[in-house]
Image: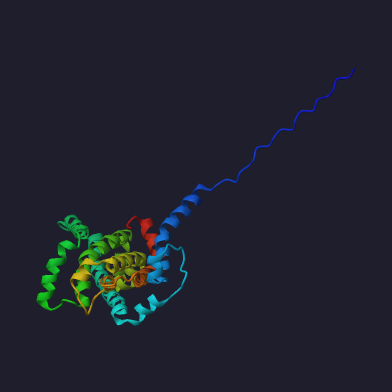
Length: 284
């Protein structure tokens, strides 16, 4: 009698699931969280007020560009952007013009109270704008600068100059002093050396400082609204016009918000490499 051979069951293979990249998941969640408010703002800007208040929709059912047409054709709206750009550019130029020699002095020379003065500059950046709103209002009203672009530009220098000095001083400290001495031996004057040799060496720092001066001046509301009424009224103050007897014009307000983001996005695009260098140097 032969032994019956019993066939053993084939081993079952474990199911293999694709590996999930945790970094990709975290980045996707972060991007969704970051872009969701911007998408919703654009979504609202392409809707009518009836659709915004009537029902919840993920995209416009009745696509309309009337809100953007209102902003781009009404002088009361588009002049807000013009006024904001004027005093922001003025503030950026003034802040850099003052911060460059100041940062050079802090990075190259040692004098009595230099550290205390440097810290005092930073305390101006720490103070809230509301502290200086009333003094600036009284001062500019007395000298005839109220409701002018230069008034807002000078007021924002109180915060942007210390920030620019702090950023530029770190970049300048990384440039060896021997370059200064070599330029003087070659016959350069201080002005020629500073413009032709030194500034190109810290161009990334100038770009970073200009970016932050532009952005802080662009988003600041309290001082710009307090120091202006009509002629230099910024877009942030103009956006309050959407509140009236009929309620809030949500569509126009959303369109104004979208157009307000555009200049900042363009500035970030053009100085993105400089900002990366600033983070690498630890000054941003």
